[in-house]
Image 1 (tube, rainbow, N blue to C red):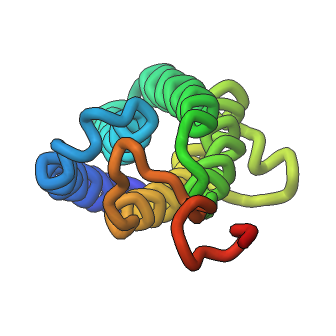
Image 2 (image 1 turned 180 degrees about the vertical axis):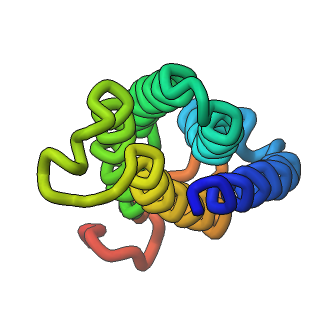
Length: 181
């Protein structure tokens, strides 16, 4: 079962990575001048890349569990570090809706859980969940993949920003609220 799942997940992850690169190419002129947007685009790429790499490594590691544990642990650490860096970079953004940042922050515990399971494969059994280690990782990676897809969607659907974009009304503009006459 896990083998078929990871084969399918690897295909889906790399297909979505290719589609994401099309999105990035389409929004390149806008995003390339905004450091926080470049970071967010990279974060989405990592969701798909790390998911695909973990899936591929799991397929070749049946006889060598240390191989999948190393791959998942490394991918989890890379993902967690990227989430933290991206959240720090998001502070530089102009005021806007923060759903994307909240969704991004939600992924951090899942990356850390991937690392924890790689370190202690019996973690699920320790808490009464009767799954094999790679099946446990499959559940966590599936949730992470879902969150990554949604994060990418929110980023893609956000209206374009101009570099000097200000969300506040100009109080010097005639007829605007807040002006004194």
